[in-house]
Image 1: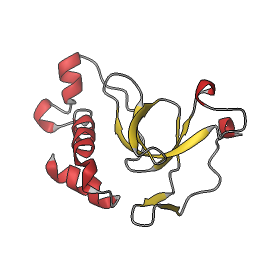
Image 2: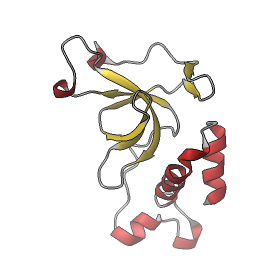
Image 3: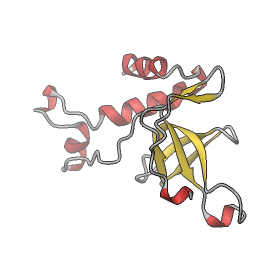
Length: 139
């Protein structure tokens, strides 16, 4: 498990302050992967009796845009803030996002992930983003 966490952390060149979230993500992913020891079933399936849904999986460490609810913004404010996807919420189909504006971890459901972009932690800027990401709710 720690090898997978180390790989996730260093592949995205994330700061070590995210080590706990990375280990949490690793555990979440491993519980939803099949294993020969359990007869090609997932630990989740053995525990709960049904296969887990993986439709909500996104690329770890990817830049993303989080929709801000209308009650939290003024008329001309941006509709979405940028963040980094760092984990999954275990209580609902939501994501844990590192909000780049407030430097805090938030839980959000309305998230659009920029699949081709990466966040440069040293320069604090986005590089290689696909400009064709569809963010209809940002307009």
